[in-house]
Length: 260
Ligand code: NAD
Image (tube, rainbow, N blue to C red; front, side, top):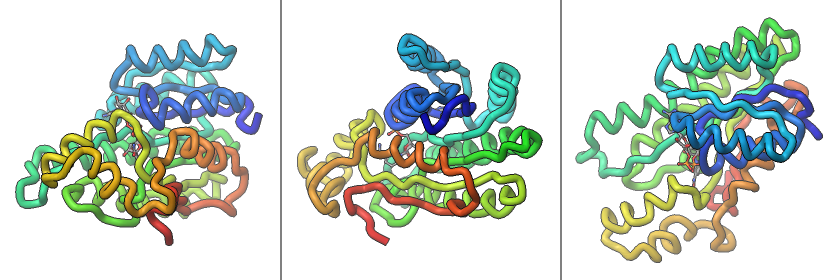
């Protein structure tokens, strides 16, 4: 149990990658706050964890809302006396060609991915600094933190930005034993990706099958999707790594979709 009793906040944990990280952290002995816009779905994940004997708490949080983020973090810190790990994972996808990208959609994308990462980081840092236990901040980047794809200007911009934030947190946090790293998954078959398949087929004028084969998996070494379990495994590594030797890094887990 590599995360025994560590207090972990996972945003966007009601679904997909965040949900699997929450389940896996709980199985590793962590106390996990399931923070999500969708409180009912977050509660269902918390119930699933407690039914298995784990420790979990559902908290309502829109990561773009400063008051909600601060209040949710304070609630977790009060309940469990601190916070050791933040996984800033909440995210959405909106695709358009740049010249047709509505400004409102652009701002929404940057708000969820970047404001969300900033606000949750700013809310947890003072508690990690005070505790003397250090901490681990994990940002959910993407292969799109390293590479671009057509139609995804806002997503690619935001995901590249997370690497800059993580490197800065790594430098500012080092003296407190606070580490920051980015996980960069390839395509994972979650609701976020399922929604994109018909959208991209429409925009690119190709079949849904071709979106999967020729867009999402074409560059992989074996034509396979990355799984939520693959991503959770890397999250456990970053969360449990106890020294500043592993900080300011971004790790691609993508079946070779992107190689650095
Ligand atoms: P998902 O749609 O399954 O889950 C996203 C969760 O985030 C949902 O529970 C949703 O309610 C929550 N959420 C959305 N907006 C929110 C907000 N403002 N505040 C709080 N919660 C909010 O998606 P997923 O595929 O699991 O994606 C999770 C993260 O992984 C995202 O950051 C995404 O960009 C990243 N990612 C996904 C893939 C992939 O292929 N699925 C690949 C690389 C990176």
